[in-house]
Amino acid sequence: MTHAFLPALRSTLDAHITNMSSLYGLMGVVGQTAYSSSKFAVRGFSESLRQELGPLGIGVTSVHPGGIKTNIANTARLGSGVSQQQGLAGRDTMNKVLKLPPEQTARLILQGTQRRAPRVLVGVDATLADSIVRLLPSSYEQVIQRLHPVPQPE
Image (cartoon, rainbow, N blue to C red; front, side):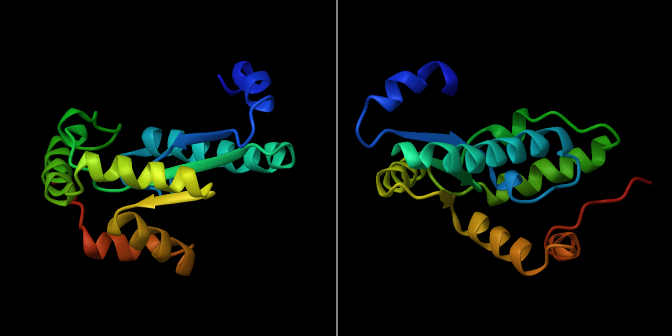
């Protein structure tokens, strides 16, 4: 789609692309390998595209929302190797942390796009996760496991 719209973007002053990634585009999470991989891909695509299109005056923002109060936890598929028990526990945990109203999320994303921010972290959880991953890039999984333990299969 970006390629298809590029001629129109090039002819518009202050053109901007906003791509939706996720908190899981900042960190890998047990049971979310496929989802997290796709969100990391959006992040990498956005970062590379920003460098390519920046000289043309086209901005690119990558959005990483955390716990937005949607139905995503209830409709998510289980990753391979994740037991039903782990899946249910994960769903219950997610439903507890999905707190930010969608309307507030939309405002934050629009504000970030208007500022031409390279990255928008939406929610305290996204900001905290980003900080943990940056501070502990090779051991953040241990911190996350302590904060939200995943039940082990019996």
